[in-house]
Image (cartoon, rainbow, N blue to C red):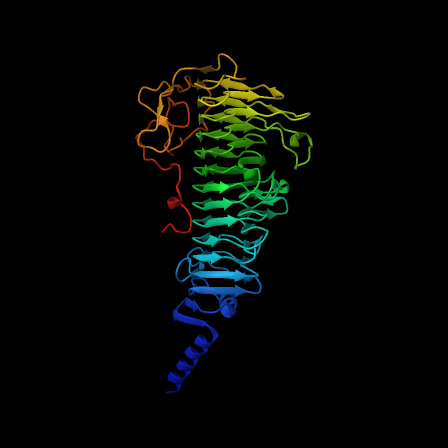
Length: 471
């Protein structure tokens, strides 16, 4: 009898505090007042289920617990999208936290309070909706080895960013995986800086390598400022993302050794490049105001210029892209007073159809390589040198696809033979996949599409493919 009384007393205590244990390791949270206590007592393998309702915070909800790879600590809405965190603070994952999963919430709390801090690792934000209040970031990631996936960031009308990546000291966060997120509806802030939809790093982090992957994200109707995605770090791979109907520009602003491939640009200002040793390939541009904008540098970091400068682009490979009807030009470098221009830029094996001049270069452009491009029905060749392109119809068509591909009989098919000889150097060894995620096999096809029977693993994205509503 005494044991029964003790059990009943324990159950009543749990119910009165708003924390209900349903099974070993699973705790149901009914009030915000005791969410922090449950988090502080969480053990590896525990799941905290937050019941549907509105939860107003007075301070950030701090998480410092450590799960394991096999037994993460999961904090999730019992019904996805039905537990709303509002008020003064969001979830703040702080050192030494690791292996924490935040899932299924709607966040309408104050901006700049949801974060993973420095010293955290292996945490995941998944299937959440971010629509925070006031100026600042919706989510900030500063630790390493984190995953941000299947979230919806939308309806921002203030300064700040949907998503900001930071680091510690001069080292950017490393080995992040950011995928299948939906970034939607960021209204213009009137030309002010500091309103990118997605900012990866800051100038002080730009020389550090991240070795992170940003893939399969969709950006629509974002125009907070002139930069949409602003990369200020080195060694970031951005692939298979879709940028549609955004007035802001995808920008490699600071940093080196980034790879940008298999992305879809539709009705945007395209891609702008600063920094060194980037590889830009297999991207698809259609009806953009411009295609690929090679930045006209105003400094050279390698020679001691400040990290905040527009670092002169050096040794950038721009190859195997398809650019359709880019109004003001497909390959562009604008003027700049006392600009340093760009050096050793390779523009090769791209397909340009329609639009303004194939190339428009204003400013110093030293030791360029132009090779094997196909230009058809453009306004003019512009500054593309004679002998570096053909004007044959590349035979492109939409077919059953939403995007334009090579048709049978296209002269772009097998246009790039494999290097011959034991000592032959393949200048396109880094070009491994096409816009559909299919492997490139020699002889290579010009442009973004490689005709192949291999499975299609990438396409232009729609809202149903990304964000918090994807099951």
